[in-house]
Length: 412
Image 1 (cartoon, rainbow, N blue to C red):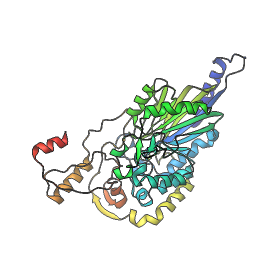
Image 2: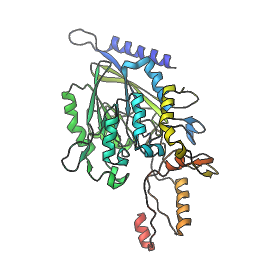
Image 3: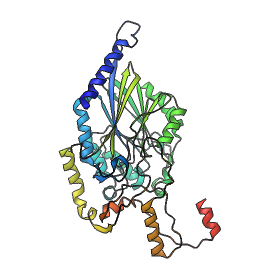
Image 4: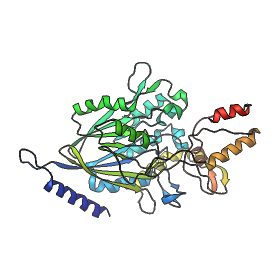
């Protein structure tokens, strides 16, 4: 299939060169190809998991070894044309991420030679100081043009990165999630502010053009609906590589002249977007989503060795048995499809957690935060690592007496 795709792409390039408009001086147009590979919302998942619904049901997917294997397959034919990006929420939520404060995840992306990472709403989960330390350890830039300190307004991360890819100057601008304080402990972000995404992009686009950028890529953690709104409000963005809403987008969404893509969550997929650039302008694209299915994607042995090294010091803690599941323990909202997904479904495992809290505290009602997600736990023994990724954030159990009117006010 890869051979057929490369052949088709070559035919497209030949056709464009033969029929495209010639330059005024009679010279042929300069046609180049860029391959953007991308991930988002890995959420600390460096190990494989089993799908429980839809196309993924019953399949073993994800993990560092398969991600590395998929990247290696593309690099074999397109090494000089590849830009490898992650749209954020890399370091939070698994026990391995917690035990290493995200360092294990940065080491993994260093090994894969990523070109940039957007700051997602879970990158600050271990404090801004820890985030700064992770940025020092990374061999790629962490990008967030709208994340500043509340004191002097200085940037926490780099705003954008400029790279030459197959002769094309590409600028990658990062955007952090502006409502991050609602999705992490407030102490983690009490010294920073998140500026308006549209105003931020408008401020930095001219600066990127001044540096000779021909193709603008926005590495965004706004979610699909936020990306679509932004693309409609700001001209000049060629591609938005997005995250946050966990969409498995098999097609690129077009808003105006902007293409928007996303690649699932928890390492489910590797996104691929092939761009054809003529004289610095994006003229056509081809989209594919590579499911990291263990039945079809070979593991990269060096990445598997790295994963073993990263997990070995914590193996006893990760593998501790904490219970047994009689059936699938599923959380709603983990993966969405091509379109944005409303977050109003009942979550079976949250209902279970609420039942446990009511039983333990003798309460009539249990209220839980509405931001839960995570790969489902299959029937059988449950490890500490599996349970931890379902309850990833610090919290206290508090009981109180409320009137019926107060309960209604809370729910409203």
